[in-house]
Image (tube, rainbow, N blue to C red; front, side, top):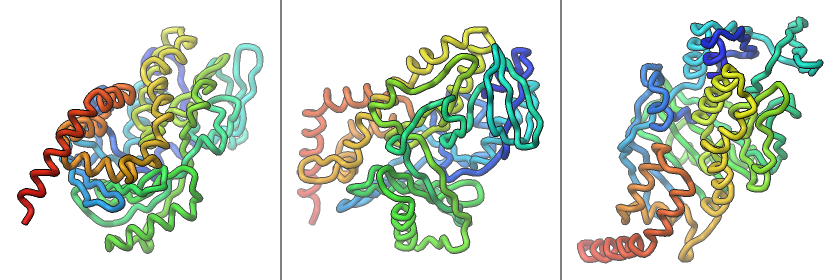
Length: 368
């Protein structure tokens, strides 16, 4: 996204990526917020999915029919779509690994695995959560990360599955793609081995065979509340975007939109000669809300309400409250901020509880 903006503005742009288009262990879901802002995504090679089943401990699953469907991409195909757009805009794509950078006066010396060296006036750092240039980009610690792992399974289903567990800050997903299922788990505060065991137990219980399927694992930034204030987004001669900037939703683990949008903003502002405006623009548009979300994440997954896990209560309320149902629609679409979400839940609390009580009463009346 950054390279497309820069090259399109006439700036000589070189995009270095060891793998270029490659696969990742994520669902690949693109929300309404993303494809509404970037309509070209709707013409890409995706699967449109309009329903999801939600599961949690000690309650019946809930089906949520999405008013704004998700577009589900293979990450390899989504990456290729974006690379093609950058190349058409005039960016030079180079399949090589950056092994180090060095600042000299007002320019950069970029070392490459191939042994050759590049010089550049400005860097956009988009090296993901495992960014080896640790002084350029977010300065996360192990407490600021989550693990995502999973399988790409040659199977088919028409809907998304999301499974929550009491005591796990994370969830299991099954997303249908064009020619396989992306089945995975993301979690914070639990080992990769423990997460993989949870996932495999769940898949076996659902009768979904993962034997022989391609396995993937990845580290994602998931910044703790105290880490957002000092999150490094930019410095002299550089900007960081996407996972390298820590721009991942701490509640859902979703990062595709924030990677695309931060890259877009970076390219626009560098091309305009205003890179110093980038950090403030990102914080104003979405990073401050992600920082607020970090204060909610543990409560969402690990908290309790009325004697039960919050995730269990969420499904029970979703089944019985039209207000909660409407909020969940907006959450899936990405059209509501976390501050607004909490304000509306708190503002409608009494009415919501009354809805739930009335619906529960009538349910008992009609159940034989």
